[in-house]
Image (tube, rainbow, N blue to C red; front, side, top):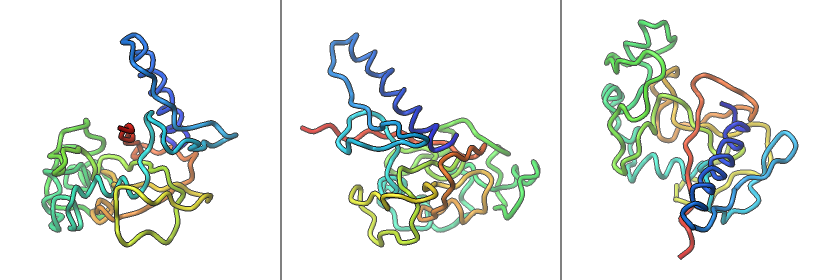
Length: 201
């Protein structure tokens, strides 16, 4: 899934949700993204529809209050209980690179929710597939992670991916790991995590 695919999907998901909300007599959600040529603009930061997390939102949620390398601690050998990462099953399936010794039972993609969630109940924030963030990639990144307050640069060549996948080295699943790719790229180990902003009181 490309970053562009993700934005289009989330707008369509918002429209689908609005069909159900209309049938229930509920007010509609406002879409977050507007097509702009071969890209998308986030025109309403206060939108109530489905969207990609910002990079800091992603890390804040993935860490769930922890300060360790992984949300489950610093010991990467515990990975198989918490994430579909590079392990013994991947090695048998000829997934290249460095692996941990444990076996999570999934050589490639795993069904969602098969591993222990983080302390806030979020599944698969490490491993399985990378997840697109809204932001353009920048070398500089805030030292202090908060739930809001950082949207990255206003333009760039590549969008941010977080969380690692079954394909990468163990260090790629660290909560702080940041990678990037062009928004049109489609890879088997890239997906999305959808979020919604808290509606105003």
